[in-house]
Length: 81
Image (cartoon, rainbow, N blue to C red; front, side, top):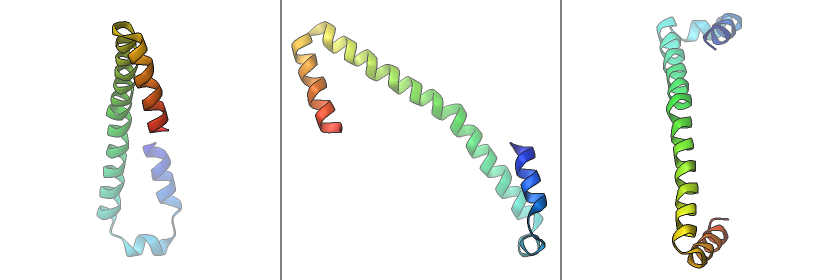
């Protein structure tokens, strides 16, 4: 991804490079790439963890009291969309 962004920066117009300092461009690119890396690393883990938690809670509700579990799942599905 870094190579692709570097290649894109190479083809930007001269007026773009004249209006921004090289340090500002490099700092912005580095920050954005680190943010994307962090999102992909931690965001997917959190999403998977939350998904497993929802499925686990649903299974436990059905196991403990299946009529009430079905009622809660139906109500939450209607309420959430």
